[in-house]
Structure formats: structure tokens, C-alpha cells
Picture 1 (cartoon, rainbow, N blue to C red):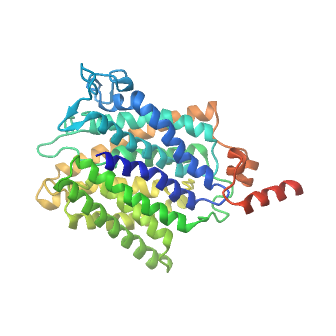
Picture 2: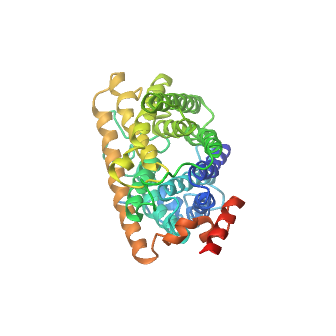
Picture 3: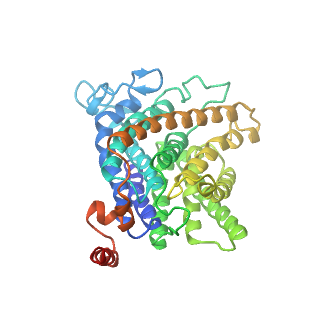
Amino acid sequence: MLTSASLVLLMTPGLALFYGGMVRGKSVLNMMMMSFGAMAVVGVIYVLWGWSMSYADQSFGGIVGNPFEQFGLGGGGVLDDAGEWVVDGGLPIIVDVGFQATFAIITVALISGAIADRVKFGTWMVFAGIWATLSYFPMSHMVWGGGLLSDDGPFVFGDAAPIDFAGGTVVHINAGVAALVLALIVGKRKGFGREPMRPHNLPLVMLGAALLWFGWFGFNAGSAYGADGAAGLAWVNTTTATAAAILGWLITEKLRDGSATSLGAASGVVAGLVAITPAAGDVSPVGAIAVGAIAGVLSAFAVGLKFKFGFDDSLDVVGIHLVAGLWGTVALGFLATETGLFYGGGIEQLGVQVIIAVIAIVFAGIVTLVIGLALKATMGWRISEDEEVSGIDLAVHSETAYETIQQGSVIKEVRS
């Protein structure tokens, strides 16, 4: 479990590389800093109140746990009366704290891709802490902490109970909806839809995708909580679905655009990983192929919706994480080997999966809207137009990733 937790933690630096390569050269450091900033903020508050809000025994309406019950990991659920770490099923609870903290970190970091190039770093850091507190921790309590969306909640019909093996609702729908709401609140980048905003370093993108895939084995196989057949199934399904998603994305690109691209392959990796996350332990390897292949096709089309509807989701968080996360969650209604429609189950599992997906969308949307508007009215989200044009790295962090960018900025300043 500690190895799995370490793998999941590696995903956030991997995401920094993935996102960093996708932005323009003048924004790469800021993009990577947003991921590292999420690690810093969430890594602290998870120990203080995040674990307690997610897994405290005292629940407020099945929505969130009492933040003070195990504040600072000092409550009875983590330490016993003798001051020893509580062991549950052979696993010390403190190990689970570390594992779950890495999930919270990567979920917050995912959101940053939707608002690349244009937001104040300080506002992002404040948002990271507030959003984790008001959206991620309650959602994890609802799904994994015995709350409303768990198999102990009200949405259980016969043999059909909510399934979210490793985070379709908690991580991907949650982050994807937040990304969409923030993109609308923050507004478009200068030149969006008129100027090319291509990835500046595709090898960096592919390296980031590879590290995400590697770390995702901790994400999914680790969620089996044991080195056993369930973990093995999750590992195989994770690999199979991701491979199928690459094929689905590349075939779609080839038929639609005439070329199968490296960016498409890297994006297909993430789409497949996202889609199989809620289903990794509950579908067969053949079912995983279907989950991944369809996710690749859906996300390949979905990333173009921002141009059709006019919202600037800079790095396609909505098109990949929200869309593939929704598909993976709903797909269980068809493909879950015990209760899915295609395996002899009734319509109940499909209905349950749709219900929990809709509730996750509404909850994340409302919470993010309130936080985003409050920060817009107080701290403000946008850097100045001049700073955006010259480059957020130099303006906000006083650094550049590449010397030529700094030289260009100095020349431009001298000429002005």
C-alpha cells in the first residue's frame, strides 16, 4: 500500500510534465507550479482535516465527516488509547491516510489544466485549499466514507449498489465539472480561437503521459487494498483499457483529420486511464477493452466541444476527465460482471450509476461556482493582459523555462 501511495504521488509530477508540455513555452513553469502548489496545500490540509472530513465516523447527513473528530490525525479512529496506530484488516490506518492523501492531491491538480496561461498563482493556491475542503473531502466521504453515494447509502436497489472502484465520481467527474465551471468564470485566453496555441514540447507531453500511466497502477491496483487477484484484475484492466483507448483515439484522428498524432496518443492514454478508474475491479478484461476504446473515441470528439460552445478549457480537462469519467461510471451499468445489464443483471445498476454521476455533477458544479465567484470578487482570477501576452512565467515567477523566451521578453521591453 505504501508503494501504491508512492506511485499515486508520482502522478502529480507526471501531470506537471503532461500539462507543462501542452502549454506554450512562456507558460510551462507556471503550469507545472500549479501541480506542485496543489501538492503543497493539499498535502498539509489533508493531515489536519481532510482525512477526518472524508472518513470520520460522525457524518453530517451522509455528506461530510466531522473535521474535528480526527483533526491532525489525533482522533480515536487513527490512534488508540495507548497512542498506537489503529490497524484495520491488517492495514495500519496511517498507511491509508497516506494513500488517500495522494488521491486528493492529484484531483486538485487536474483542474489546473482548464485555466492555463492566465490566472494568478496566489488565487489558485487559495482555491486549491478551499475546493479540496468543500468539494473533494465531502465527495470522498459520500462515496468511500459510508455516505450518501456509498453502498451503505440510500441508492441501493436489490443487488445494485453504487460502484466507484478508484475515483470516477470522486476524482474525475468532480475535477472535470470544476474545470468547466472555472473555465467559464475565468474566461478565455487572449487570442483563443484566433491564434494557434499549440503544445510547445510534445516529448514532454508523452513523458508525462507515461508517468501518469505508471503511477495509475497504484491508483487502481492499490485500490484493491491487497496484493491479490483483485489487484491483479485492476492492473490488467488498467493496461488493457488504456491500450484500447489509444487505438480508439488514433483511429478517430486518422479518419477525421488524416493523421494519427503523438498528442492524440498521449491524450488517449489519459482518457483510457480515466474511464477504467471507476470500473477497474468490476469489469472483465474484455469489458475493459470496450470501456477504453469507447472512451478514446468519445474524448477525441469531446475535446473539440470547447470551440463549438466557446469556453476555453485550455488543456481539455473537460473533454477527457469529465467525459471519460462519466462514461466509465455509467459503463458499469452495462459491463459490471455481477450486476451489469450485459451480464444478466437488470436495469438497476445502470440507474444507480446514472444517479451517482448526476449528483456528483450537481454537487461539484454548485460548490465550484460559489468558490470561483467568491475568489473572483475578492482576490481576482486574471493576471493583466500585458502579463499574459509577455508570458506568465516571467511575470508571476520571475523565471523562464527557456533562455530564448527571456531574451525575447527583454527585447520587447527595450523596444517598447
